[in-house]
Image (cartoon, rainbow, N blue to C red; front, side, top):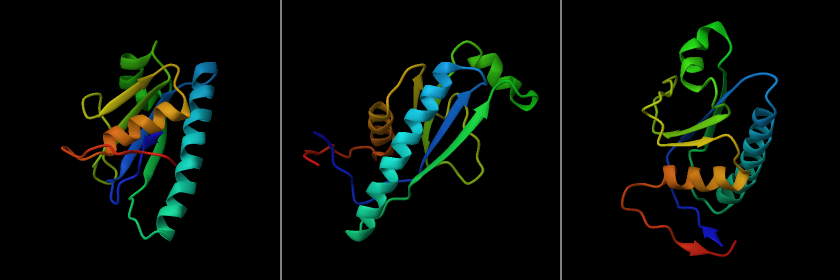
Length: 132
C-alpha cells in the first residue's frame, strides 16, 4: 500500500550532490534513476486518465568541481545527498535551506518516491492509502 497520486502536484526538483569514484553515489544515482523511470510510467498512465502532474526535474552536482566548492564545504563527507524541492522558479538553484527534504548516503527508489510524495503534497492535503 502507498499514497495514491493526487490530481495535481507541483513541480518537484531532485538535486543529487555527488562526486566521482564514490560507490554510494553510484548506487544513489541508480536508485534515483529507477524512481524516475517508474514515475515516467505513472505519468503516462495519468495522462490517459486526464490527471495533471507537473513532473520531476533532476540534476546532479559534482561537489569536486571548482564552481561547486561551496557545496564541497557543506557535503564533503556526506555525499551522496539528495535535495528534494518544490515550487522553485526555472533556473533557481537549490540551497541548503530551501530543500524541503534531504536524503543522505543510502536510500532506495521507494524512499525517494515517499519523500517526493511528502514534498509534493500541499499543506493540509491528506494522504489517501490505496492499492496500486
